[in-house]
Image (cartoon, rainbow, N blue to C red; front, side, top):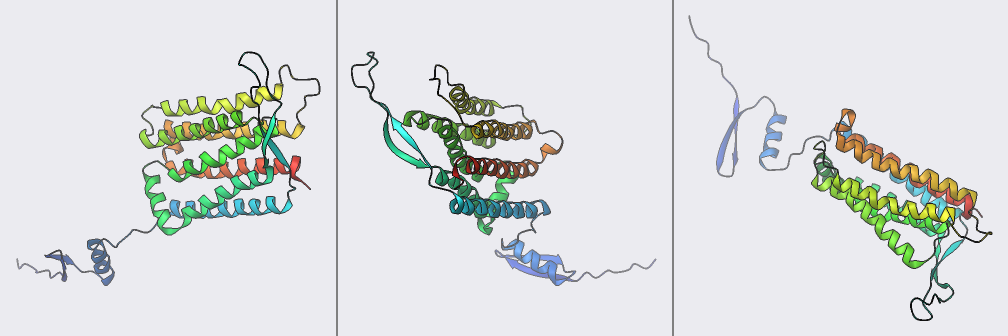
Length: 296
């Protein structure tokens, strides 16, 4: 039986002093291999990541719109930050009257957390940043989220506390610090723990830290031993209840991610939920504050 000979058209590439031989079915294959050998080739972005980039951009636009509207439509209402000092030796119970250190403009604080979210969403969409974002998501972490949340959620909790009557600078500083710690514990959970392995210690530490601002808020709402004229506007109750629920939804998302069951195995699913939750929670707080105290 006469054998048949098969001729395969080949080409060569010279890379790092080595000749590489490969079949050459088409010019595109040659170009891709050349780019691979020279480190210039990148695979097309996955559909999930394309959709995530669009979602970040849209969220950034919506945050930006709220930021602009809050600045344009709001009045100049502000709330005081005060200090109380000892006037005699400790234990005598003698304190100065509260001294107004400065005022915080409510609209600027509200616009501030909207602007921060808009900035980070747009920053993620920059091509060079998006590559890092995509790489981090493949590792189960989003550093940009935790940096943004550490500032924006702290502004949110300060607004809520001030509307609820908390004005002492020590109380505000302490609760701001505790809230930042809550966010950093969430960051540690992602940085050092692999989803599904059952380790939730940083998460539970974060839950403990995150409960402190809400305990203080509820305490002020109840106003134990407060004067008969103590009152809290009705819209503040709505803010406290709604934002408390949404803050706990963020914790629920991370808990579900680290249980890693069903659709939560995919880290990108949780990332989409975070983006939507962030927009809804910030918008809800912003426009509740606007309707209750900033409408001209």
